[in-house]
Image (cartoon, rainbow, N blue to C red; front, side):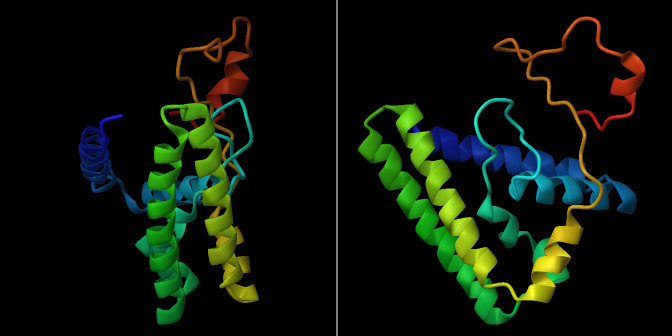
Length: 166
């Protein structure tokens, strides 16, 4: 596993996403944030198999922090928790010795624990605000075109047109 290549790919991905996001209008930006919150909170499954995974990195999103009105202490909790998660993920991959299934299972557990730790630092009003940040439920179709999860024949086209698609 080439960590430097993965890091570079991650940086390139973030730069590309930023270029796209910078061109979105206010309505599109708001909807994208709603979908990100739903995916990060496990409301929407991105991968059709296995459990939805919670992503604590959503709490590092500046727009989320602003909407939740996080305190300095809460922002520190987010930063420290994500830093610890990064260390634990690195260790999980090292311990797995090439067994990526084992590593990703462990990463899922660690991510869930970190998400819960950060979520517990929120007060009741912040939790309600976060739930509302998800907006209308995303009913999109993720078509990666592999593993038999691609489009199915004979689907109702009109029904599919009503969904958000990526």
